[in-house]
Length: 144
Image 1 (cartoon, rainbow, N blue to C red):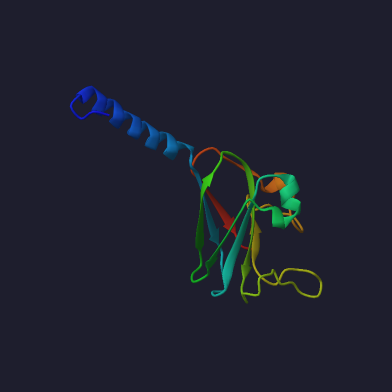
Image 2 (cartoon, rainbow, N blue to C red):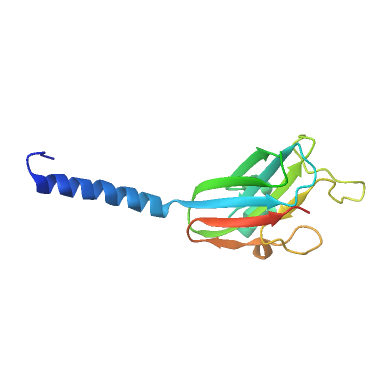
């Protein structure tokens, strides 16, 4: 590009701005706010799934995140997700042992939650927790 020709400079600047805008508009961001945390300490563990098949096998999460729990809410941000269908599982790993602890009856003894906050016994189906990302999206999950 020649700086001696103002049209070339303007065209080059428009290309750069257009590329930046196109890149920004295609980068979807998911913000997960976890509320209702009663016990401080430990780590909030979050997994994002994009299909019912992945939902059934937690090792197939498309993205995972974690953050320390130091207050009644935790916010995790997952950038650069393509538009589409998603569902979130999370738990409060209070003792930092890397797993959701449960009592002798199999009932979780640490906080947990799912997107859409479904009122079901056990883990909901993917469709019950599913939501759509079509741009920057913020969801709130209440810890059980």
